[in-house]
Image (tube, rainbow, N blue to C red; front, side):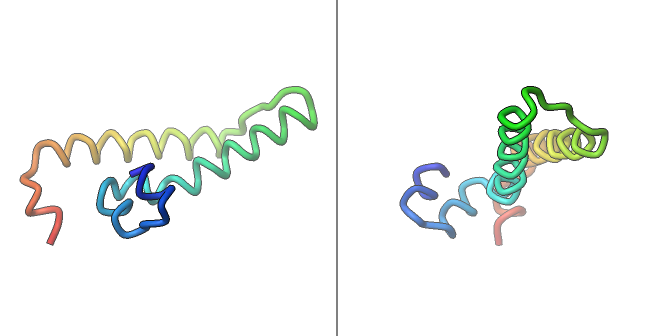
Length: 78
């Protein structure tokens, strides 16, 4: 997926791993906010909302990994 993203092949990257492709902007934004807080204030504290969003993303990734490996591939991809 990273290779397709570096080459600008968005459709192939989406097909490679749809969940990570969709969650990638939120991860990049979260890392940017964390880096800004570390540089600006010397430390970064995570709010409850940010913590909840990251846990939700982790649960989504885990569920997708299980479903992707249990169900036949032709059910997930038309």
